[in-house]
Image 1: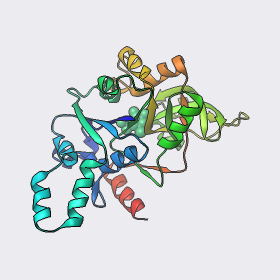
Image 2: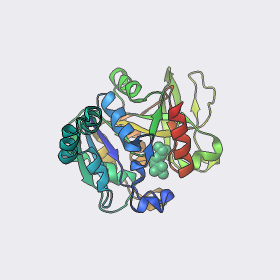
Image 3: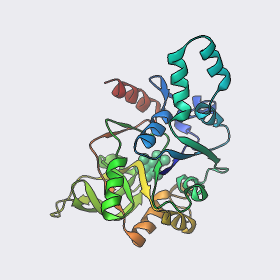
Image 4: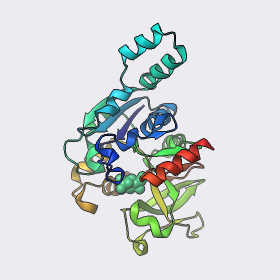
Amino acid sequence: MKAIIPAAGLGTRFLPIAKAVPKEMLPLGDKPVIHYVVEEAAAAGFDEILIILSRGKECIRQYFSPNSDLENHLEAAGKQAALETVRRVSSMARIEFAYQEKMRGLGDAVKIGREFIGSEPVFAVLLGDTVMQHSSPLPAMVAAWRSRHKPSVCLEPCPEDRVSRYGVAGGREIGRGVFELSELIEKPAAEKAPRLQSENGTPLSCHAFAARYLFTPDIFDCLEKTTVGFAGEIQLTDAMEQLRQKTGMLGVTWPGKRLDIGSPAGLIEAARALER
Ligand code: G1P
């Protein structure tokens, strides 16, 4: 199966280091953040991957490409374990790269993958700056697709005072941890944030989009029709709302946790969480 990993953003919250080191290349233990994202995709069966970059972020490409000089050196030095570590990075998945020329938003970045995805029935989108702790939601999203034939977004509970930082969904539970969505909004004000409901109509806490998506290629037509939205950018969420109206969309919760590495403090917290 195929996946798109958008990793073109400027990483302004990580300046000045993001001038030279993309936020997706910052270390979590001995691996960069985006290594975990590719590993997660491949483990869920999405082993053909397109990573969307912007100019200046070529070291992501370098990281995933074979390095024969280094491999020859390690081989000659008899450093077998190091050699295997290095080779594993470039053999986890078949990875291609494309560039987003102008920073027009997440929706615009995903749109670049249209040709790569072609006629695949479904594909995943994993944001390149988000790591999942404990488990990936992708298997549950694939299972929801197989049983209900609808695209999905992964959801996690979000305190009301933080909904204005995320995409937020309203909808009703139709199966354990699976919601039929009725509304998708990017970064709403707290008082306008939609909520989920349980099967019997009990209101649940606010839920935000947690950086993993499973789309049908219909999303590309929706993206073509999407005009600039929040922050003057082409928002993926606005295209998802169109997709919901066309085919329906599910929200899927899972027992893991999204590690918020959107800021230096979050990155440090995530590194501690992964050690536990
Ligand atoms: C993006 C999406 C948002 C989502 C968030 C975290 O926002 O637009 O819907 O909730 O990622 O997955 P960003 O963090 O790029 O502002």
